[in-house]
Image (cartoon, rainbow, N blue to C red; front, side):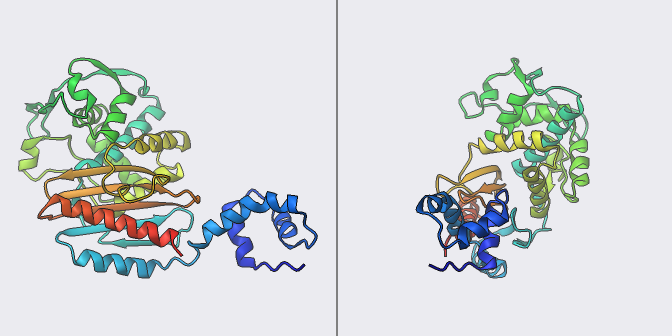
Length: 333
């Protein structure tokens, strides 16, 4: 019996299972007298190879063109950032430098700054602070409060004047997009300091300038801003363990995986796809941003931003479709 194997196939297995010695792979695949028992041992490798075959010829230019064509038919302004984490060449961006109101996507940079400062020893994530609904405008320092809904999803909107750990506040900020938790954390770490850290990470145009519902600032056009490129850079740092350090970044990913709002990037993806994401939405704006982990070991960053929407459902439906197009391009023959 003769076994033929190409260098390309060998390379694919090595990409998926780099810890396996190359000499063993060649021996196992090429050895004519290999036993059935030994072939059973190779079955996981062969399954990995089969799973990886569909990604071998990804045409990012064609994928980008298809998505651009689809977006051109939708009402609104859109931006997309795609970066495969296993293959740096698999990348494309659409309107990546266009500025958008950040909505709640700014909470990911705030989390990064929070974990960075905890790593520096300024406080511990297990420390507790009081949940006070009292904040100050960046315009004139005047006090304002949030309109709380104790019956809503955010647990901290029914915990006013109670104590909460910094970790739990951060978890609610990301998973339930808690505005009161966000404002408390921004008071702790600072908006300007958050922006400076993001710029140092390479996200040069993102601006975190205030907490949520500072209406005096809003009326003067002072709002948090971002681009798809900036969020893509931040999420890539988190995915690679370089935003703070591998331990803290891994913890941030686990928080993002607990996301409550899953109606954009995750909406049409199979249940065995794991998504660590942060959404954002206000009137006329729908965003989603995150890391997608496929069952075959692939992972990628996807940022979807939208504005000028006549109806928010258009942004949601468009983001869902873009996410599904990218997923299918990576998993279907």
